[in-house]
Length: 243
Image (cartoon, rainbow, N blue to C red; front, side, top):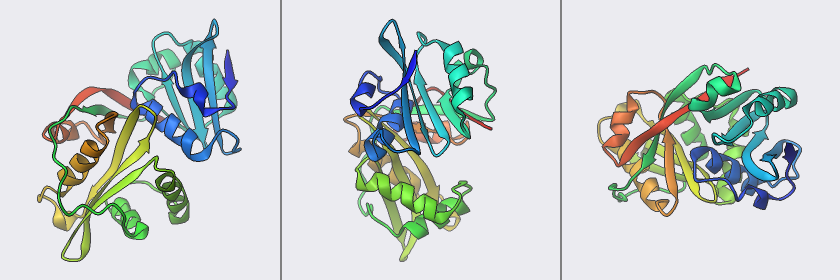
């Protein structure tokens, strides 16, 4: 049975995964009573086995092999979504063919916190850098509202580097949940590439958050080798299906 939750504590059963990082961080940021942010738990014989969140149409699924995938698929289609992010190994069981998929990597240690990292920066400059590097962010005001909400609740963190007075690179701890953290939005100004700035921002955040399981979704398969150099190992594949 899948039911709407009333308290974020109902998500405490979730393991330390990148998907639980998103779900528990969003629950901590927005609570469970907002009409645009909804959270559900699937139970089998009263035991919680999966969780779903949907924020402004974007859905995240966290589940294991013991979930009822037929029920999950029917439910997700019934409530509707604009996109769903999930572990790619469950795509066939869910009857989903994702449009995007690549490696999930997990931090195993070895990076060093770098000097000169800025943990607050002009959000508009961050937005323009991310857009220049190919991130599809939509409207700036929506981006600003979402990012600031998570930063203010300490469910996200920013790392940035300047050179010659200009923004050179940035990275985010996008979602810091109860047991795990998902890094992302890693971008380097094209004019500043090849200087190790991305490694410094990501490595600094990974070291800062290493008391929890730290994950990152590679944007494409070729980036797994880059992240391996700063202490990440490949542990699976993420997937996104967009309606």
